[in-house]
Length: 392
Image (tube, rainbow, N blue to C red; front, side, top):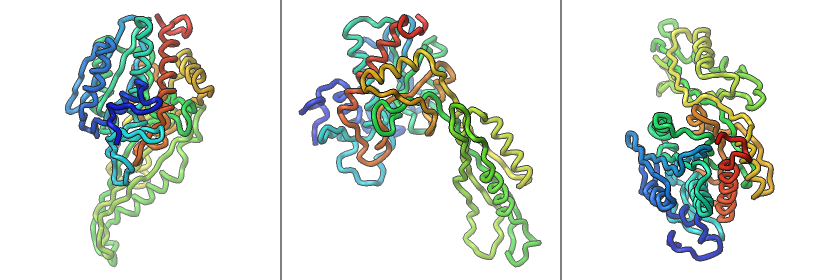
C-alpha cells in the first residue's frame, strides 16, 4: 500500500491529490471526525484563512474565510463519509491507495476529493495576488448523518455574524459519467410520512367481532399511489410518492391484527410544498382511513437557483477546462444545498459520482487535476465583478 504522504508518479504531486489522500486517511465515518477537519484547518491556515471551529452537539464543523470585501464566494462541503459497508474492497477503504492513475478510498469522490480540489484552486489563486473579494469554506461533519447540527447550524452562525456569501458552490459529485456533464441548480423537496391505523384484534373466523386495520390502510395506499401528483414543471421532473414500508407485525395466520402501519416518501417539485402535501395526505386519510394517525417530517423544500451571472460563470469555467457545456439539472436526492438556498444563490458541481457509497469508491487523478482547474477558473470569474456582474 502506498503511503498517503509519499507521491510516486505523474499527477501524484498535485496539491489536490496530496490533500485528498490525507483526508481519505482520516476515518471520519459519521459521526466521527477522525482528524479530518484538523488536517483541513491546518492547510487553510497556512494559506492565510481565518479558521473558526464551530462544534454543535457532537458534530464538528468549521468556517474559514480570507478577505472581507465583496464579492464573497463560499465553497460548502462535508468531511464525514458513510461506512465502508459489507461489500469487499480491493484495498483498505482508508488507505488512500493510488493504482493505475486512480485514487481509491471512502470519500474519494463524495466528497473529500472535491474539498481538496477547491483548497488547491484557492491556493493557486492566492499565490498570484491577494483576493479581490472574499473566499470562504463551510465544512461540516454531519452531511451523511441526520444533518441537524451541521450546515444548517453553521449557516445560522454565519447569518448572525454577517458572513453570508453572494454565491455558494457545493462540491457534491454531480456528474453521472464525465467531469463537466452536469450542474445541480436545484433539488426536489423530501417528505417522509408514517401512517398508523388502529383496529380491534380478533379471530379471522369472526370478523364482525374485530376491526381489521389493514384493509383501510391498503385502500389509502392504493389511492395515494395510483394518482400522479403532477406531470412535472418547467424546471423539475414529476413528483414521486413511494410507499417504503407496510408493517403489521402479525406472525399468526388466524388473527386479525390490532394495528397496521405504513411509511412513505414524497420527492416533490416546485408545484408543491411540505404544507400542501401534508394537507393532501390528511385529506386522503380522512377519506379512506378515518382516525388514522399521520406523522410527517419534511427534510427540505424544493428549491432552484435561477440562471444568471454566477451560473453562467460556472458553466464557462467548466467549458474552459473540459470543452463541455454542462447541463443544468434538478434531479436526484437532497443535499445540504437545501439549507444554503434559504440564504443565498447556490449550485452544486463536483466530481463524477458513479462510485460514491460503493465499495472501491475512487476517482481518477486526472479528474482531481481538472476539477481544481475548473474551481480555479470559477474563482477568477466570480471575484472579478466586471466579468460577472456580481456585487462588489
